[in-house]
Image 1: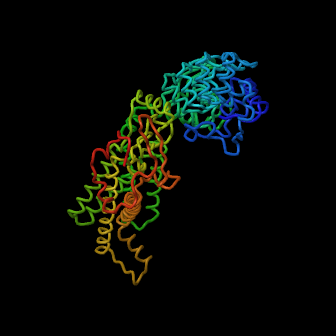
Image 2 (image 1 turned 45 degrees about the vertical axis):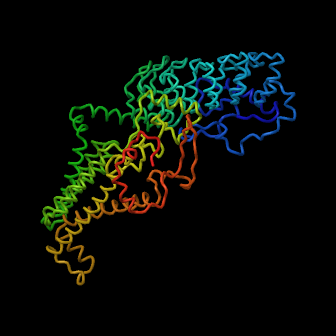
Image 3 (image 1 turned 135 degrees about the horizontal axis):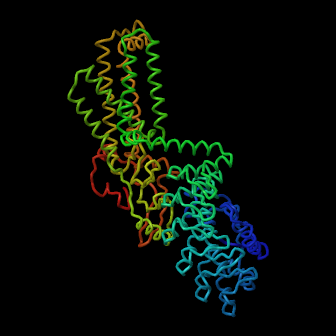
Amino acid sequence: MDWHGEHGTDHSHMHDSCHHGHAGHSHSHGPRAAAFGGMANPFMPAFHGQFGKSADQTMELTQQPKKRSHMDDSSSWDIVKATQFGILERCKELVEAGYDVRQPDKENVTLLHWAAINNRSDLVKYYISKGAIVDQLGGDLNSTPLHWAIRQGHLPMVIQLMRYGADPSVADGEGYRALHLSILFQHMAIAAYLMAKGQEVDGPDCNGQTPLMLAAQKIIGPEPTNFLIKNNASVNAVDKVNRNTPLHCAVLAGNVDAAHILLEAGASVDAENINGHTPIDLAHQVHSPLLIHMLNHIKQERIRFNSRCLRVVNRYRVMLQFLLCTAIFGSVGAIVDMNSESWLLKGILLACVIGVINLASRNFPGPAFQSLLPASALMASVFWMLVTWCLCATVQVLFTLNATALLYYYIRTCKTDPGFIKATEEEKKMNVLVLAEAGCLDPRIFCTSCMIKKPMRTNHCFACDACVAKQDHHSVWTNSCIGARNHHYFILFLVSLMLMGSWMFYGCLTYWSNHCALHYEEHGVWGVVSALVSCSPWVLTVFLLAFYHTCWSGLILLLQLYQIAFLGLTTAERTKSDSPPEEISTICLPETESIQFGSGAEPGVLLPAALLWPLQTCHHRLDPAVSSWP
């Protein structure tokens, strides 16, 4: 970062804030503390917003220090000021005149520290060539130049210093090592690089705390706790002093988001610290009703799921949920179709069904139950459509073929790998190293959740927790992602479902015309509706189900065909795009490889091409290992 202005106003202030600011950081300092006085970022964005950005990029334009000409009086500057401004020729002049590059200033700060914090790569190279010690401690906190670069978020400087042999395991005066500092200041690109270079994600600082403990205790919010867990940080590690786990730390800090992520990752609610306190005990001490409720709820839920019966239910939950939805739909239809004039009896029976639904939802809560609910409801609806057709209409060959195609394409959509991008741990580390050292650790081509280099037109699905090649969306009706390998099956499933609904309309109308006395001219609309309800509530219920599923499937099908034929975009690309499709930015990668960001296909493709698109089986179009998805 450039530091301009008079030495007494900018650099002296910088100098003081570096040291006195450091001195003000006790062990409990948080990530939002200004590590270098006035040098802290004006805001602390979430991980994805900050990933790969330097401090210069996060400062607003009005906050950028005004540049001034160095040609006026740089020849008279001392070497510290020349280093801060990056005046290489002046620094060379003073060093050649006899200045020792290892000599610290009056506050024990070396020239290499100043060059590192201001991201002066040429000066760092020059000073090290003249004998500067890369791991020399300086400042009130006894920090190395690497520590200063990390606190300021200069990834290129971190890479350069480590190439010259900087040791990231050295601790500063507060006991923090390089990885701990990068987590505290939420510089995730640097943290990813350090872990790729071999730093242990569970490595303790001098106080025995792991990076996950610091993240849970000092940074309110889901990140970087979630980032560390994605990188296999231990959720049950304990510190050396108080034997606290990361969950203890999150509860003590009142960090609800971090506690939720730790609990989902399997953190123990019964672990005791050195004083015999569990996270629930600490939640009572900090007087947090939300944390108390959350921890007790998770504890009771885990106790229930430890029973053999619930383990069996959880193993077969997909089939059981489908059977439950089928039974509920059938019960509702049978009750309203009862040959009884007593609506009180029907109301009582419907209330009983609602009670069963409420009981089931209470005993089987959680994301897994909720995520399967739309898919189970859809299949239960299709099942009763088939039953109703077989009972109330003449079975025809076309309907049988339609029903078979619907079930086939639905199963293929659910079971086919949508194009998950997979990588081994070694490949993940190599991706981080290659992209970081090339200056391309950009969230558009690097997934911070999966720690992989994303091929073009690849998106991360948070429901599947994986990167999907040419992802369109995550469908609640199939409980799976729609991507490069199953998109065509999904299109054909929508077509089959629409045709199924049309057949049901035909069957219901045929049944009503043969079995119900409908006189629209005499009784009007309400008379016809009343006649339909009294004639066969079951058929009317199935008609409404078919109408609902036909409506949403038809709308999605039209949207899909429009996006494929005229936009050349997936739903995810169209939703996330903040700029016109023709705007393309290029990021250069090593070995002359480049990636362009923008529309993946030319708009204006004819509709017949879109209709033929689902039938493409060309290998290069369906292989998620390629770096570009057309």
